Image (tube, rainbow, N blue to C red; front, side):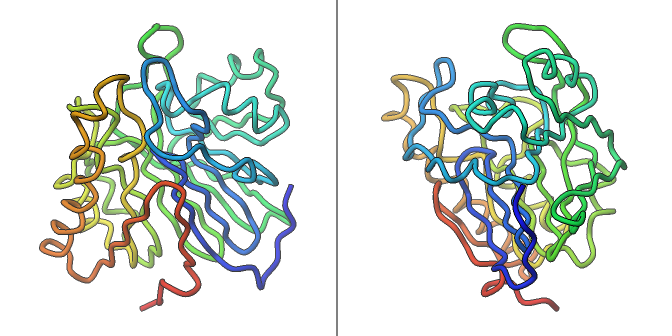
Length: 267
């Protein structure tokens, strides 16, 4: 477990797809880790994440059971002792796989993390499919997460808009919002750039960073879908500028980091 350090720089790294590393006052939080070159027929279109991404983690957040969010080989690479926060219902499966620290919050539950429990993670609602596609198996209600530490951060996972999203507004430093997916089309329960911009307008964070884009694409289709690997975050930024001009948008390429201490000024 990492040591909390009050002088540590707050920063976020967009690792790729729905994976982001939050470093908040020395507390290290990793979201929906996909750290491999491929998942099934999906191939990574950006550099493989550095091994250091999965080191010294205080907690790993899993939003739902889809293979591009709950990737067992990536979790094994991080280690079986890492603390996992997962949707209720998948815990027994993960424990049988050898993971020893599994907590299953439902929306509204808070879990203290970090040295001297310096931060709190609160599960929040999400509107998305709860199955383990494409092979069936367990189901669990998807969730998002709010991280409360030296900064207040919302990680949406995968979700559509929902009424209670407005309850997260107010003194929110950062929103990590999905703006696309891994292929040429989006199904139900996803935000496209326009929908993610509406979410930003509801949430009113100081900073919004688009995620869930530019990382995975089906084998053989990437060269025909370059625009879908590159355009969604630009469309999102343009839509936010129109709908919620007070919200700063920063587009990070997969693997790129941003200092929150330097870039997010509290109102």
